[in-house]
Image (cartoon, rainbow, N blue to C red; front, top):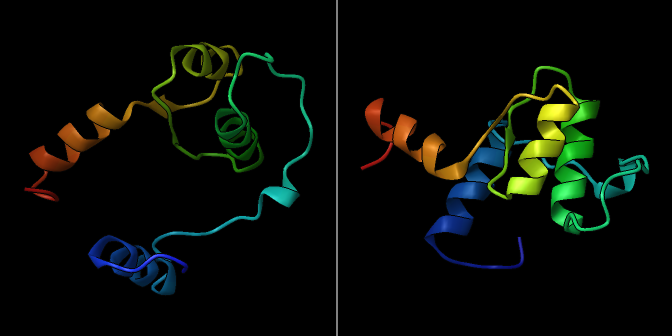
Length: 91
């Protein structure tokens, strides 16, 4: 990883232990998505489509509407953090 610090170390540990998977954006097929979506949202939606039973974490309202139209399961970051806190996963 290029960055250093506690967060990047924890992310690298999660990757090393296979809790997180890094997927190259080169593997993403081109889809027709609204131009107003950012590149990150487009890539995230494409990855969610390619990987069944995935959970798309997205806050952008347009991206959420597109995810719903495509039948994807999604959640916002704030909601995800609230659930993690309720389950004692974060302080």
